[in-house]
Image 1: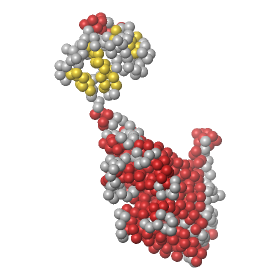
Image 2 (image 1 turned 180 degrees about the vertical axis):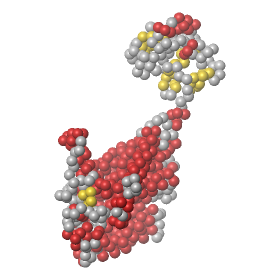
Image 3 (image 1 turned 90 degrees about the horizontal axis):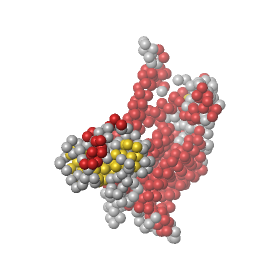
Image 4 (image 1 turned 180 degrees about the horizontal axis):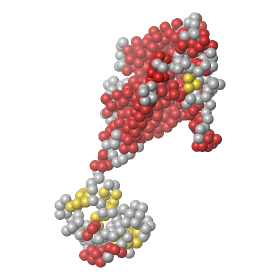
Length: 189
Length: 431
């Protein structure tokens, strides 16, 4: 510390605007430490996000050709259950007979299916209330008062289009992003 | 601690007043690393390494906690999860390289810290307790580093675990049962890996606890200094903040440059390629060495090749290796010279630079070399000198040496023996 401070008077280290050399050094050092700190925080936060192998498993292909009308299969999409159901004519009729305006989460069956394949209903098997798996996909399970799905945890009833009709769930069963990659195969995600 | 002229903490606003009466954390910081802690004005950069060691302990804990989020301590998947960290986890490569090289840098700064302590005799009264706690920290670090190196479950991990636990097998009668008990099996496997992971996670926090005691003990007498002359008056000290926060900050900047140069450009330079081969209990790597920071002690272990009287060579090596560190606990009482700094001890200085340091360098090189000549004979000579130095030479030096004249005070050492400066005891430092 000795050399510069011992020989230089305070005036010599101050410019005309009254800024000292030391002020510059202080600001530069603290800024560098601050930016460095942020640069450290970024990877520390980012490392908790899904890793590459998790993201690589984030699409699922399902062959829907074997599903009979009225039957549903459970697949897995991003480690969560996925319901793929082929609706019967009666179920489609029941879904379309309901006026969307009266619903908690207004959506028509057409909104929730792909054009030309209105009988294939693809939804997450995750209740929008608190995440339980609703019943109704497997044979013999309770389908609820509206003939679709019923969540046993807190009693949410979904209709044949997977729309919430009764109970605490706030929204319809989520329809994930998917597309038909051929006439009989869908790719989810 | 305090010198009577230490600045007093005064809470300035409502919040600090509120805190000061309930949980006086700001006061603690002010008195520990703030303007309220007077420190000798003449500390050199050798006094930076305590702060740097604390910094690298924090780096190891932060990166270690992150790695533990992605690692699984199971012999089936440990190696694969390590690769998963390297390839799949966002910034996982950075976390792992920062952790692996962080261990090396932790040891580098701690070795320089110990070197400082040895040359300036920082272990002498009234600072024996600081030194003893430091040796405890060093032993804990060695245990932690060893167990951490086992976790990736590569070839070096496995054989390191087998060899080091084998040391306990040298104990007469109970050795083998102890080794089996330590491993939870007859060779390192799932049980050993799991317990090593558990302890590797625990010990750094134990180290942090002992570090707090180490700093507490330091703050009673305050830091030593390059002259070894105790603080006499206010003109001998400057407040820790801003003087040493700035000096430590600068040192930290240099250390970080070196550290990240390694992390980014030479991340595997201090590791062993064999550890990227998964553990194989049926094949030992041809050249098996521990991490570089264990080399001197590994050389002492291997220096004993023949049985001594009734003591088998294997047991002698193990005893010597542990004794080489445990004797540090007796250092404050082996070196009886009242003069601390090596700068004023001509005889001590000669044996330090031309005896102890070359012996340590030889041990370091031999520990990393294969167990063949000339390394064996060199390690034997260096091991002999190492023990002689501490157990015989140091005590003799302290009684026969004529120390050089000490400066009257730290101020005099810094500014020269201008009578006006020395006698004006309560003047503030001329900065």
